[in-house]
Image (cartoon, rainbow, N blue to C red; front, side, top):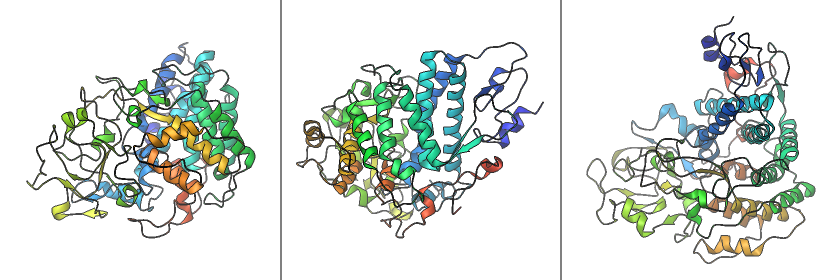
Length: 506
């Protein structure tokens, strides 16, 4: 038999053989197909489904899918700060669109997504009816991300030869598969449970269907960089699926990001985190930007680009939550941070490690040094830190919110879809910002509002591509990117699978 450890060290999940063994069931699976067990063991489908859900936690870190979706845009940047945060230019390459097929975060995202597809396949092949329908939803979600980031998608038909390379869907074929899967299972999924959106449910499936149809013109385009044609029938599907969502908006925007955010009626799908160690890396959403001397302490890394920050009204509650309990616990507002930072209580000014005032500035370069090393760049906290346990917080990681669905519907109607917006709900979306404004009525206004409402939630790259703005020059990338950067490259080693072809331009 082949040595399992050697295989694992050289091959990528979802492209060729994951592992082969004759004695260990965990090593007897191959791209979702179970190899006969000479010991007569059975598959623990419940455990595998749990593993498929736990895979969602891989979105919570600062790299992989989050970095590709946000740092490649006008919003987030990872500057090099002297000897810190260079990582062989990993972060700067993402922001400046200079990555290559050997980029570690590109490889990490590819492996993560397809590893989770693999786990879902095992449940689909071996689970109960309830387990199978949940696994099919999760598989569709993981494949959506593969389609969005990489275009093509490897798959293996049940019962196919284990010696053969997996087949590969084109972007159009994978789009068709995801839509057909979701439409086949949406009626069988359970209703969303109040207080727990972490289980696959009808609202989540309707949301993902709306997202697929909204982007269908992008995913089916002959050239991934456009032009894009948005079919009116597809846009009407967006309206239909958003209308099928049974939800309401949270009165306060920050209810979606507080430690007990599972109580928000707006969250349609999430990854559950439990205080005390059972969770993912959601603390990265505050530590990746915070200075070492702040509470919570951070890694003094990523920053928000001033050009993006300046799109907001300074009084917009979506970027500045200064509730008294937050100031008491942490000293500074949650959201975007600029200016002098304080110790808990908000009175005593903080200093950097060189005893200089800790004053965050909007001015930022890709490589910082000298006196501004620790202070350059606007910092961010998307989730309210869990004061009861900063290291293993309670906040659930949200993937889908009803506010996004309402904005998708408004966009789809402007792109030719048939339907009527709910002006009351859109009015609440505007009023809870605490900034006087109007309901967006143009595509440009929708684009602007999506950037404000959904900042750092993993949708910015997708939105910029759909609106034709992703490749454009911007503050820290003063040039138009080549068309190839609309898709990420297939990782170099994944091309062991002869059915995979490198994306154009790489």
